[in-house]
Length: 214
Image: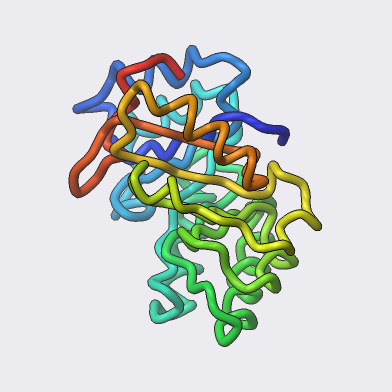
């Protein structure tokens, strides 16, 4: 994937049907959608969720919580399997992935398990720039997640330039509309090719789409 927008869709069609319609109609700028039912695949498949996921024309990544390395691998793998069995996902978005070198082998095993379960695209969400070794394990790394005020201080280490910009994603919330262009420009300057900015805020700023078009 080249540069564009990746959307963390942490909202249910029962409460945000319009947002799902907008995602289904989105143009080429949207490159992937993170499909989060309930901090994972949920307890059982839902027909309504299957329908909205199937209408998307871009890769759908199933959300799975890695618990910063503390969540048992068996639980993570069970969520991977449920996503693959229940919904038309083509990859996995592993959230809360640790950033230090001590967890490299653990995360390598999770990435391998995802691919064995038919989820070839693996994204690690560290929320910060991790140890460079993670770049060999995943197809993409989220190297920033946070408010626009913190994004002003983002700085990429030198090693990121050894990889394509599309490998690095920034997820920015609490972004005033008049700062969205600056966020995209700054992300590009720090070698992040995939960017999502929203003016939504609160405990879950990914519970809908921004006030501007995607």
